[in-house]
Length: 252
Image (cartoon, rainbow, N blue to C red; front, side):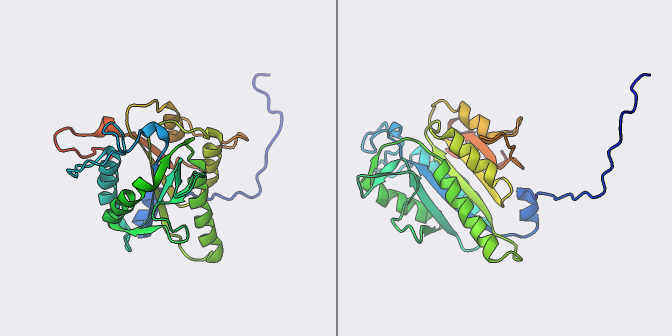
């Protein structure tokens, strides 16, 4: 007999749990919290060197990190009602000999917030002379920190609609903690969180494309797939308009 019936599967109960997308949260009127994390690893070059990605010109034209912060921040700032941005750095020693992979750029770990995009620029400019660029380049600690904050908010008030987090990571190259980063992303994939990674410079960014997972959904170290795609990668150099010096990836 062709294709014989060898058994039956009876499903008595099924529950579908929709996972809201970023647009679902926005359309529902949810407010947004914005966090920025900046790469201060040694591959960026000495900030006093004109060829460094962190070089701040005395004539005040912006470096690529500042351009990216302004271009994206000025767009998403309007969705954050209090205009308070949490700003972090990673891959450097800040006022200490110990390298940190997630530190508050304003020096206040308990209150890492600054006001508006101008506040990010101010904290960036004040911190830069106090930083000793090092490495390695790690995203995991920052993503874990943001995820922990979201879960704590949900646990403390489970009936309230949580604020949506938007994490902007600006980086000069590939991550050293790919497994930890992947685990953190998969673990956070059911949370109200989106991560935008902006590649600064012309380094190899193939690992970032894997995290983006537009085609194949990423899996953690145990083989568990992300519940949704929460990462978007954009290479700064490929979306810059040489005439006006602004990013063209807003629609992206």
